[in-house]
Length: 334
Image (tube, rainbow, N blue to C red; front, side, top):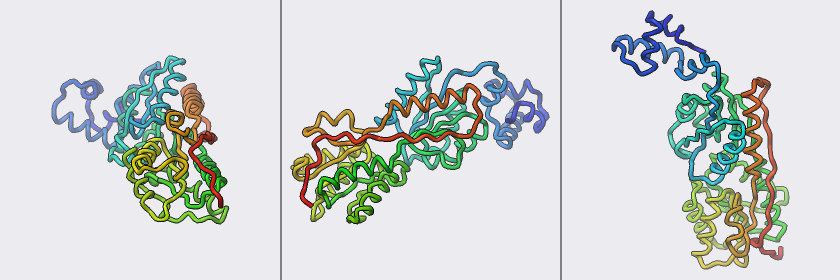
């Protein structure tokens, strides 16, 4: 890890001048330019250097999520705060600006704010920044999606099997015209859930054509509504729709209501992460529930283990979802 001494070696400047610059005090323009060139060449991070000089940790952990308006993300943050807070560790939360926002530096910016480790819901564009952070030996724990080639622990839902449970439930009730609102298939968890539905259809020799998959590009309620409207306008109309996240499920229910259709008599629905709304709609919604509290708890435990000095190989843990059966899936004759 580069230090002030490395910058002194490249620039020939005194340690006091280098320290003045990184602590926001004025230095000569030529010295400023030389320090910045050396810092870039060394990939030097001032807070990382400060960490190496401190005798104690910051007692703060960073949490990076794609967006703050997603129920799953905020539930994870709440669980992390409970567990880490019990150990006197505070949580600093940042948003990357959205699934497709061009903010690959969000992770590095968070890592540079005097945190001892990061819990991340990673996007594919974050990979280069996360690789740099891992190279600095900062503990990383990935939630919801794996870190790919970046070294770090992970706690994930078994997304394929969770979606497969939803598909089996629908097919077991005699539905054959089944559709899915796929959202953004570039999101790993969504693509895994789509694969889970496809696998069940293939196992049973049932049709699940591309026309039955409505991609939205985003994961919002408005996108879910538009996608459901497209599916409901097809002929013949699907008798059941599987929806892979909370906001898309809300949008699908809005579309069904606006279309004057009844659940489950005219269209059945299986949602995802709908603990809050499942009992509000009538009949009660059938949905896949993630063990969010357990995921957050385990992610916090893994991070605490790393902060305590464990430098063993990465740990990857997979948790099972649960099918919560309501009344939103009708039984049909095959």
